[in-house]
Image (cartoon, rainbow, N blue to C red; front, side, top):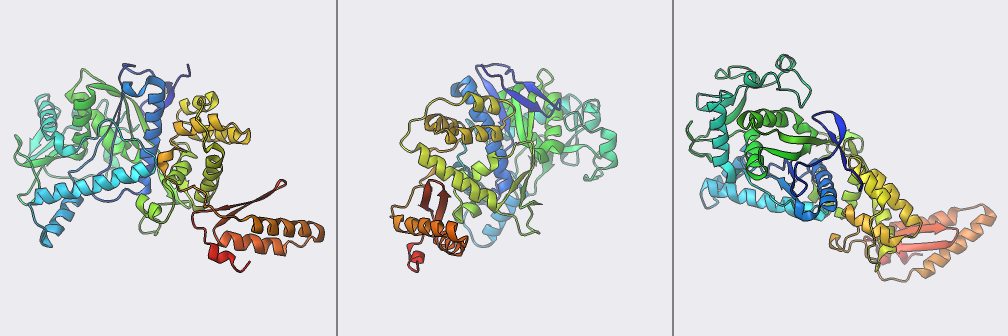
Length: 464
């Protein structure tokens, strides 16, 4: 049986994955803060860990894998939207409007991720559902001397964990202090100390605690939910590499100090960031867009997923219009090849590639070979493992029922003439007219094949 090997950010090495309990493989992934639509960078982490979840289910059985991904629904931006709605005359309490906004954005998130073929995790906890567990963990940290209360806040004392703090991210405390851009508050004993609990004003959501009415800090949320749902020790913790420091570093510190009997996560995995046309995605560059933006523009979710899977999760991924166009053409060909074909057995070569630190690009290379060999059954089974070529991805690739044989004959004749005269102007003219009409032109030695695409407009062919 093929071994699974994963790159562990903690050890900075690729390791054979050996779960604590093969009957219950446990994974926690940091989910979104639900204040707005998910952008493309958010989607990359979802697809990466969806692939890991699929691999674990294939290897250990779906009933033996527990995948937890949280929703952070305690946030200033959520509060700001709720306040704006209340000021605009919306009915209900502020807490009710905050909950309403969270429900709205969680619904959007799940809908958009489903469009990308992502399976829902087994458990999707909301931070607001685990406030008592967060308070209990903070109390344990205070009792053990790892945290202190000051002016309505509770802060984690980094000095109490100084020997180990920074091991995950590969930084020393002294270097972090020297280059820190952290809040220097008078109630902090050290500039690296971070907030576990903070006061909440009367006009904002808050919860009663031993330190007064307030709300949790961001880092304690994931620690408390992971402990409650997966225990003191579990197998894998994942997220984008932008979370490596300080979020994940702080999770390790507070979790190991609160529950020294465990080791928190054994394997840490981080995906690299996303670029757009070779540049960092940002609103200032005008290249920032959400998953819903692309879906509404007619880019199929399956195409988005395929483009993401072409790049290893540990490398920056560049989204380009050209990649999306090529992905769509490939998926159309594969869907044509596998239509009405029952899936066979997953390719062992593809499974070995996927088991080697989620080498999805290697799986896709194998799928091209399977398609070239006409092995539709193996191709379909392997594609299903990647979350591709499933019927529930929609009928976007369904061919339009139209007879284009006349235009195919016309183009084939023009090409025959051009081969003799060496003048391909008429061939180029016909091809361009067909492309403008939304027709994919496939020319080979065997002949001409015209495939109407999703934007096919027969009216544009009338001039031909």
